[in-house]
Length: 253
Image 1 (cartoon, rainbow, N blue to C red):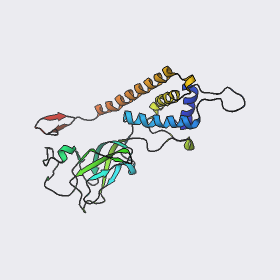
Image 2 (cartoon, helix red, strand yellow; image 1 turned 45 degrees about the vertical axis):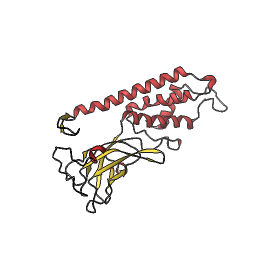
Image 3 (tube, helix red, strand yellow; image 1 turned 30 degrees about the vertical axis):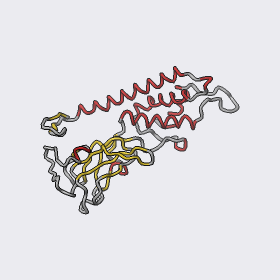
Image 4 (spheres, rainbow, N blue to C red; image 1 turned 120 degrees about the horizontal axis):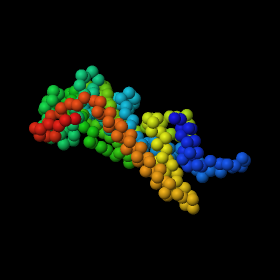
């Protein structure tokens, strides 16, 4: 749905904020600017909570160029999670690791990935994303690769599969813009915008009960969407992963 359609739905059907005057100034409680601001917040919040925007094609987001002797990279600010990464030209994905494993001095993996822990540099074979940094007061996901790339690997791209936030804000300047979350959930997304609007209403007319009901429906929709996203894993083949918890047992993924 276009932003203009979502704005009409929010004002007319959720908030019942429609003027009945035939002339004179608009008889409404909320401005378009305010409602679009709430819709934009709802859009980002739904995406963050449900993990429903998955991307492996947007070059500016999912392509990470390697640099000589650089191990830690700040990822695109829209990225919430990294699902996998593969260096271009390589046949296999990078092996996911963690900070403790990366710096333990030992390679705990017993799969087919060849990795020389004594190497000071070379083609990255594993990565971790539990490194983080504050960039201009905002948390930004960082990715650590190991080994450090050498001049030979410089310029090669790590192609990522990620879960991310929307890339662009919804604004009145572009009312034909379409939200990035799936269309099936766009009307449910408006429940948060309605909650915001009612919570910020004039105190004399505030309806907290109605606001909370909109919030509850939004939370229900997020859970439904998240469950649907997680159920897609049922269609992926199960694999065995050995030794990834620092011991000799196994886990099934």
